[in-house]
Length: 241
Image (tube, rainbow, N blue to C red):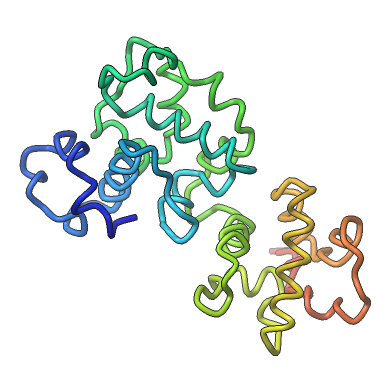
């Protein structure tokens, strides 16, 4: 998303502090401010981040099940952040009189992991409750989020040659066991078909229990020869100290 900021960020620039308005997007600090600005610039064009953009992950689009939910989440961020420009959108989409919040309040909430609280305190509880996986995701710090969300990004991008999975996905979901691209594609199809049916967090629980083969075989016909592919180091040994 950052690539188009130079030409598409004009409407978002006044939301920045005066000292930041002449900076390039890449110079905005901290990262939470930069990422939030990229999201805001896209909002003015009703443009969502793509799966290869960091905002797709950090702002919870990765939890959306289909375009309908992506649109609902974009609405939440637009109502939360963007000033009423007199368009028909704001005549249809009524919002709390406390909105929009300041850009600074938004990026600091993003940085602190309190975006759900910011939504709830500004009349958006009902809207965000229609996205049940969003709360689970945004209420956990990025470092503590289950790797299944990174798996979801990897599967959505669907280009294992150009976009390799992050190390945690490789280890947790058996991709480290794959000897060639064909085996990687086998695992991708297994997990994609399973996630079309089940909650990602259910797959995560099976992962940390070391039961990926048993779990996925309930939803996807699996060959016994694929069992070694989904093997991981879980469950971790208990600490008896």
